[in-house]
Length: 459
Image (cartoon, rainbow, N blue to C red; front, side, top):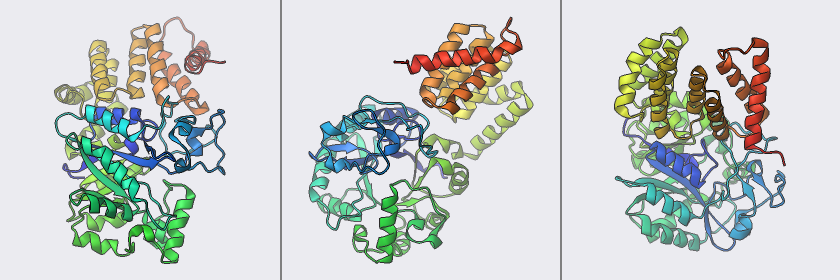
């Protein structure tokens, strides 16, 4: 990936917090992304809200009575008023649903679905210096023959006041909506988005995990076979390869797949969208492309691709940790972290703190961790390392507080996270004096239980 490629937080940063939430946007902006992607839906009373899907997702939604939504139930946002929508509890993961693509920080939020106006206000206040890029994804009306121009007028009216502080870009699978925007605002930048190639034909790529309900993929496949794709505004998905080449890639947004590579060699305005679970293959894919932007659920998973030097540093630090060469790691990392104020790759900060602690340079380790928290304020691994540091200092109560913070922001309640927390506490308390080894595991389990009860009090 070239240094000019912009990094966008997909769905406001769904790899960190619930999708399209104000918390996700605040977190991603604080980390220094170049842009934020949000999705817009329209309620029955014509309120514009930020939400990825046109229906409520049963994996992350409780009904007003507190029960998880059934998979068979359909809750279209367009058939709910905004007041009715606020009665649903969104944000936490249904423990019976194991969707690995979703983030691990799914904690319940007081106001999970924000109004578009609230999102615009927050982002404009956080934007300083160069305007923040805001990618607004319009709903895909694949099952509708006609589109409603009133939606476009409402969106344009809301974003107009923020154009001096936010660089607005519109995108959609439904190219009819983008055509309406171009009619109203000819200078407005639009990115024409395409579904994963395999949705149209299996020969166009490997099957991918669907980011929309299964019904949408079926609509795409049925429309392709019936040659009825009204949302492409008269074009065919076969044509987009030639269109991208003719336009030098300007204004296109592709699913990150090897089939996109030929159009990146000389295309400066192609944006790639990728998912968190594809990280290893995508890292390889992006290493030498010329994409204008990358939209990712977890944008900082790819920050180490910025330079070859940074990749070398990450690999060197990993080798030092494995061989316990603490001083060599410190000599390499410390000047970089201090000079960059921790705005470099997270692994540099985290591994440097570990090496300093192992060398018993506790104060320096704490300084590095606190510096890291300024750039990564909600990264649970930094709190875990702070807890390990306080354990070595024998500050047991402070260590427990850090364990609490780490777990509170990490994964929410699950059997797996409880086991991981217990194991981590065991590893960090092995050096505690006066505690026989046979008592370490029971003590760690009691500590983990205390943390769980503080976060999830028993009613």
